Amino acid sequence: MFKVKVNTDGLKLIGIAVCGTSKPYTYYTFFKTKVKGSRVIDIRLPVCPKEGFIRIWNAGSKSPEGQEQGFKIAGIKKLPLPLDTNIADSKNKSVKNFVQFAKEFAEEATYLSTKTNDGDRSIYKSDDGKFTIHFIDEIVGKDGKPRKTSMRVNNKTGVMEVAKKYIVNYTVPERIAILLHEFSHFYVNKVHSDEFEADMNALMIYCGMGFPRQEGGTAFYKVFYRTPSDMNIERMKKIMRFLKDYDRTNFKVLN
Image (cartoon, rainbow, N blue to C red):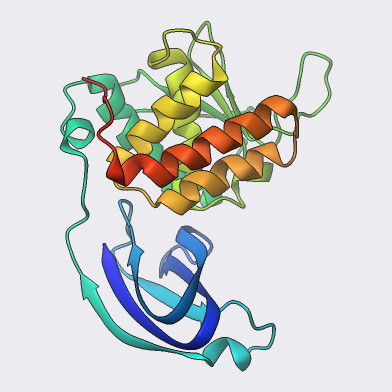
């Protein structure tokens, strides 16, 4: 985790982005936050490039010149990333193995192909062979029409489908948050089809592994804005409440 101290000359919307030198179109974090006067901003990087760039800019300005004005970087420190040991050191092998698989897939997804050399859909498996992702251009329903969803899981087999059309525009943490939601449906939920339960189980793991809280919210927003409904509005409210309260509440976690 990096702690960056930013000073501003008034209220400013500060943008933060991290990308790697070898994967310039993969964002390890990307968010905007308001700063007035002086503030220390946490940059959480549970998945981090070996070499990369931290970009900080005035996101309230539309001109390239203005993006470099109105603020100063007063200091930056690199520290160990705080983790919830109940999650990070969990004895649940399914959780640990899937998190590792999700990290690897999320980091590479921008550059992975959705087709094999023979034209079939690309299939990616975890090292232990337990988890499978079908990486496709778009998810198609039984009626043959494309769906506006980025991911889904088969509740009979646990096989996931991931649509590159949508997740190419997600950051690494956002990809992992939604992957954990689909994982939770099949491997964690008491009721497989319960969306609210899958949201909470996913965010419990996501936050416990140290991922940025804000992108936990934007991940679901990017899903919901394409498929608005009363249920999704209620889910979004509960998600934002959970993320706001996580670091000051003792939650019961997976064992």
